[in-house]
Image (cartoon, rainbow, N blue to C red; front, side, top):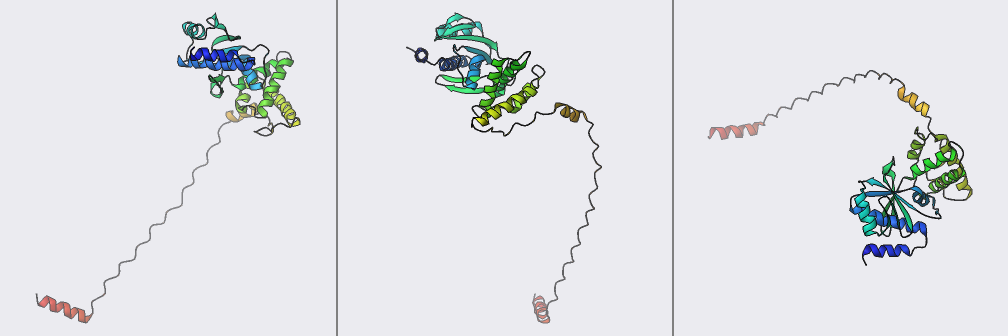
Length: 268
């Protein structure tokens, strides 16, 4: 048996479906990386990884973060190397459904998280993007209790350092026109902070929840005309350098010395 077959056999022995899906993602990511394609885990499995939850029937959704997926490459790796059942973008291996989504729609790719598995590194879609999507689904167009609970769990885990949340990126996303949930973020985060404190969990590593930025004030400040710069003040005149005292004249030789010098000159 080859190394891939050994890896698949070890995955089949994992009873935890979420753990099996993550380990499978590591194996698939390694095989595609060899072909020059970097994959990223999206969907429910990424959420479960951040929220420390488990889906009853885990599935794996993958998208290209760098490089391009081709039908031939998918067939070669999934059918030829992993012996998965399916075709092109939908497969099933070691009991885990797998779906390829093409290129990821992640906006902030620089904050993707790396998750180390026994079979390679798994890249997770940014937690900030998952969180803003859950906040929007929780309140728009009608309240959604399931999405609200998922957003709450993500915020509690972020506030207690279960994973690092880039709060600046999250605030920026929440104020984007396609989301517009900045106020909802502030409310949910304050509620999550109170709950985390009540449970005696770790404190927020960035301190108490601060007010959201006033966008109107920022725009007004940016559009205000710049104040005229004050006229430069002329520097004080530099005093001329002090004159050096004249060098002292050499002292006249003594009479005895002079007579000796005259004698030398006469004898020449």
